[in-house]
Length: 143
Image 1: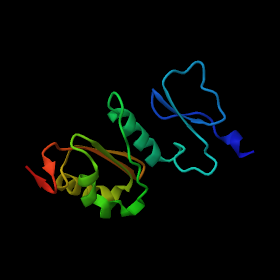
Image 2: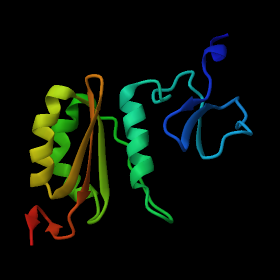
Image 3: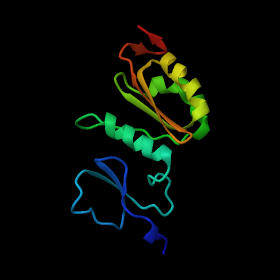
Image 4: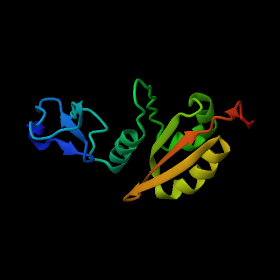
């Protein structure tokens, strides 16, 4: 019964979230993420998910790559010092699920942790921050 409410959800020109039981539309090219939205968070309906998916699409490198998805909620601010250890030099960090008031504290914390090219996007009261780990950042110091 609830399945009738879920339809393909375009996130960008190329990216669409598709319920698992739906066929890929013949008229649409691009990338599709299949998800069973029943018990799931991250169906694309919430601004934090949309911003995160758009950021992933924009920064995905060619070839093989890896990603770590950490559901930290408001604890993300406490995790700032650890990001410099888990993101490889040249790697990208995407933080989504931040409230507008939290973004002012996030940007300087990321800069201190060795991230550059910081970009902030916002939908409603939600914020997404992306950045690139500097090559010269090692063990808490810039060389």
